[in-house]
Length: 265
Ligand SMILES: NC(=O)C1=CN([C@@H]2O[C@H](COP(=O)(O)OP(=O)(O)OC[C@H]3O[C@@H](n4cnc5c(N)ncnc54)[C@H](OP(=O)(O)O)[C@@H]3O)[C@@H](O)[C@H]2O)C=CC1
Ligand SMILES: O=C(O)C1=N[C@H](C(=O)O)C[C@H](O)C1
Image (cartoon, rainbow, N blue to C red):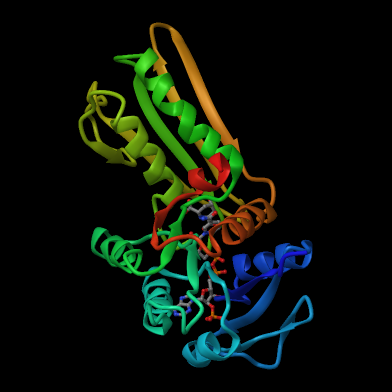
């Protein structure tokens, strides 16, 4: 039997960190190597002790995880990926720790830092680890191409503690929409007196209560309407996808990967 993939978990007591630890516990092909947060208070998550994030670098060298799963924030994700690249000697003397991040809200510059880390270690970034969202990404371009001139609006809804808007998933879907049609500006929310521009894409971010994550693309014209909707019912769906990605990427070549690579493998 092959050795289980050893996974380091950041943001371990966050909404997603907890789900990731639970998802790892559900499987036999992987195990938690260590789990960190910034201010551990002796708490455990599913029996896993939480260690100080300040010790992340030394945990990388002492525990040698195959991969780190990160759901934190853009700045911290970059600090963690940098630590993984720094710990990698680029030869056989150290274990290369791959980096899987589901963190969203990166600026273009921050995204570039993630890309440059991928020159020395395997890095997989996905704004959404639900397989249904990947299916939605795959079909939305076709829908747009088949309905030229239709109005396109995107509505996403999340819990009231989410920081970034629009969501990372919304931005990914918008990129796909724009790559498949002739569009003008993205209009974030709408107010005032003028009707919508024919070619604008309306983008609406709802933040309320405990909503796990919903994305809907509306294509409307010619006295008809198509709605493509994904609704996550439980954060476990994201965690399961991230752990699939971690097991898949362990031992991969340095490079930049996304969740489609995992699904297509
Ligand atoms: N790709 C996907 O499928 C999904 C992506 N996400 C994304 O994952 C990220 C986290 O979401 P969620 O779990 O809901 O958020 P939470 O706020 O619940 O948890 C994030 C954790 O990250 C840590 N953290 C935040 N900022 C920093 C920092 N500057 N330095 C170090 N650690 C930090 C905190 O942990 P502590 O302070 O304890 O160390 C916090 O508990 C978001 O970007 C979200 O959009 C969410 C769901 C699915
Ligand atoms: O913050 C969240 O909760 C989520 N964030 C991701 C995003 O920004 O797209 C994915 C999911 O919708 C949940």
